[in-house]
Image 1 (tube, rainbow, N blue to C red):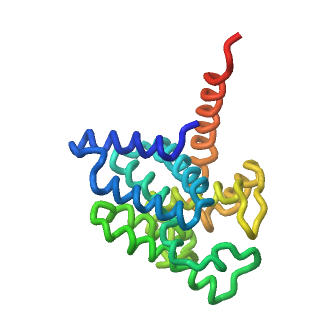
Image 2 (cartoon, helix red, strand yellow):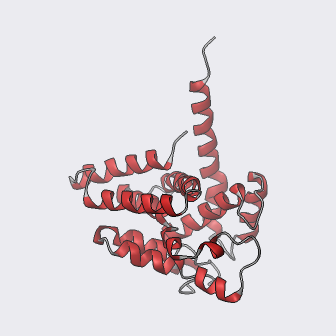
Image 3 (cartoon, helix red, strand yellow):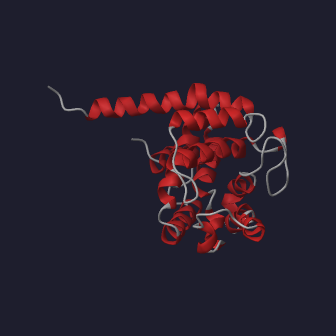
Length: 225
């Protein structure tokens, strides 16, 4: 199975081959430190972030992103929840509905994530994408109330990947649902929460590509007769 680490490695090779940078550059080391902090703070986030990054990598290829765009997309996908390191456990793991005050604090995590990432100048573009990963197509998202194509394309991509992964994995306040049910929710949210064109791309190109990749892995792993 292709993991987020594999996707990031491919993106790194492409970007650094163009820019002549080394794979152990300061930005790569910074990413590694942040991922370790996330793992230590919220170990269960690792699987989610890996899943979102894998979806985003496939999405970027479907949209014909160039090497640098793909690099920013995948890094932002894997680090989009970095701001949650500042959210108290009792809010992150609450099984019931959040209060208005708790929700207001939770909504700050994208801004916190942006500030954390901007501490590393090489991650400036990633920080900008992370800031907007909870903006909605209809303008009802946060933190800036952006709407439609005002929202960075990569942020719109990550929102869809994040939502699909969260629905199929489940959360403390919501049981996991099937991929088919999650796709139906994405379709219902197209034009309000999600970019409708991108939802179509996700359904028609991204998931089939992932399914094909998984079938190829399963086939190669099968013992020969």
